[in-house]
Image (tube, rainbow, N blue to C red; front, side, top):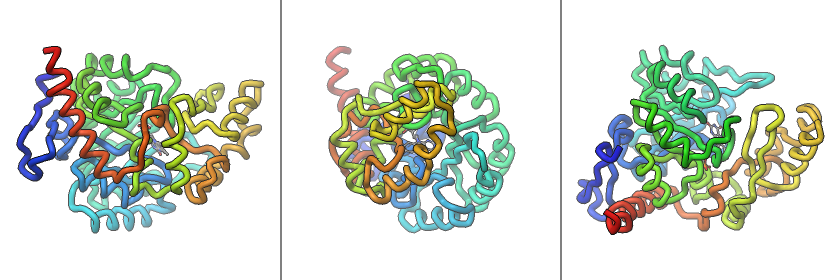
Length: 340
Ligand SMILES: Cc1cc2nc3c(=O)[nH]c(=O)nc-3n(C[C@H](O)[C@H](O)[C@H](O)COP(=O)(O)O)c2cc1C
């Protein structure tokens, strides 16, 4: 895949900042192959705008906004902070009382958003409306077969989440080191690697494995503009790669979350044969939201990935974009050059 990546030594805008042009940056019209994936309660205007302003792709999470009208206001707020492209994540997961997905989709289109990240289920039902409105879709999934399906229904790019990832890794348990080259062999459209990326070493590795960029969640969650309590960010910095739990395995709806007393208890109850109603009070979304708002990391279930083991500071989101690209450039042109 090396022919699809070009290292640009002399960028037009900032002489000091190297750029890595890939099929993904070209297809999406962005400067750097670095995406901030949709994150419930985290993907708000300040964070998304900061990532986009730095030349990556910031993504506002649709369902974090209580209504489609609030989503439109959030998009407009982000536009006051940057005039670069901002995406919106639309996650469709099984739910007892589903949100009005069609109305959120309509709001995204009416607000003039041009890039959408779909996740959770097939993008097929949305493609006609998005295509008619000129919206480019990045579909996030966790298997090569779902990536191929997304390609067949006309998405612009795929974001493929390895087993390391925060949130829902699926049930196949294939880590990025295998999933990324497997996807590279199978896909024709551009794709980005997701799950376990936090720096330029990861970006360089993703490019080496055949991806056209990276998607990062946990790394951007632990930045200045991320709208969560400082104590949660500090917990991420202090935590190691061992400090996550996989909950809901027996329900075939696996989620990777922070290891704490609540997720430990959920794992124990389900391992002992418990069912969803037995853990429902523990996993209530309202408790997880409280973690982010009040900063009590033991108050409920909250999402983070194994990559926290290599997250050691709380920089601005723009700094994350810039140094990820600069470090990847350095790895590609210096460290790896010695083996060429
Ligand atoms: C706090 C948090 C909330 C998330 N919420 C969502 C979500 O609502 N929809 C979604 O598609 N992905 C969600 N994700 C997954 C991220 O978009 C991304 O795929 C994942 O974090 C990549 O793994 P990493 O954390 O190792 O970078 C979430 C991740 C985090 C950390």
